[in-house]
Structures are given as C-alpha cells and as structure tokens.
Length: 106
Image 1 (cartoon, rainbow, N blue to C red):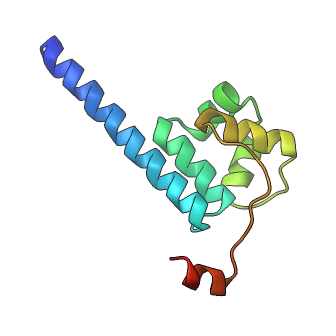
Image 2: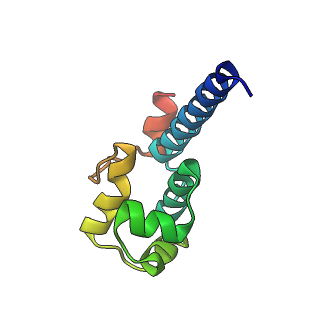
Image 3: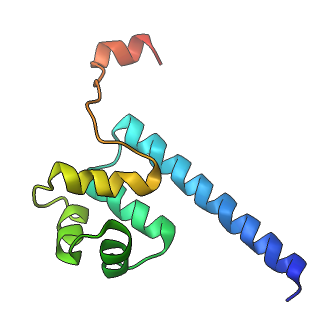
C-alpha cells in the first residue's frame, strides 16, 4: 500500500467518524436516543471495547459503563461529565418543546 493510499484511508476514516458524530448529535438533540444508547454509540465511534473505553478514556469501572449503556443504574454527575467530555459535550438542563411548539416550529 502506498503512502497516498494510507492518506486517503485516513481521510475517509476521519470523514466517517465525523458523520457518525453528527448523526449522534442530531439524535441527542431530538431526544431519539437514550443516555445508554448515546454512550454506547460514542464508544463504538472510537472503536473501543467497554473495558478499554471505561478504563483508558473515562477512568471509570467497566461495570459502571456497562450499566449506563444498558440504561441501568444512576450515574453521578461526575460520571456523566466524564462520558460527555471526550465528545465535546456538557451535562446540563435542556428545555423540551411541547408538541404544539414542535408543530409551529418545524
């Protein structure tokens, strides 16, 4: 494989990662995905196992990550912040639009 092919493969991989992140962000914004689903998607985007992602990236126990990905447990604010940080997200309050507001502002 030439260096040109390697360079192209890297660009394509980065583009795919960007596209996956944008899709995840859209799902988060629309409420289409749960905290567990979003966390699992984040881990899959970077291509790590639960153990690797928990220990190396988030600095939490793998069991805690497993519970979060399965929408179980009650993660602390600190844990939620650790999950959000690698993707440039912050934990906070989000105003949910009522059904009537959504219909008025498509």
